[in-house]
Image (cartoon, rainbow, N blue to C red; front, side, top):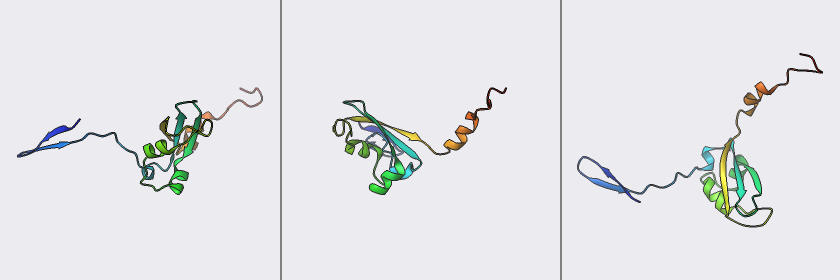
Length: 103
């Protein structure tokens, strides 16, 4: 539905659309895509997608073109953008401090 923006001497109408995330803005991420039919799940590295499609392609466009490897359904899916950069920093606190039963 168009919204009204009121300026000093004019009224401008503009459409509100869902934001479209371009792949070029999220190279250190993954797309998590889940099939809406069989619930098969896959993770796609965005940097690899950019090498195949243009960086101006949106995550939504990739979702629409994605075909499930399990059942073959195309476009019936959901997606999430997952940040994967700096995972080595996140894992620093996951080190196991007990070795061979020592405290």
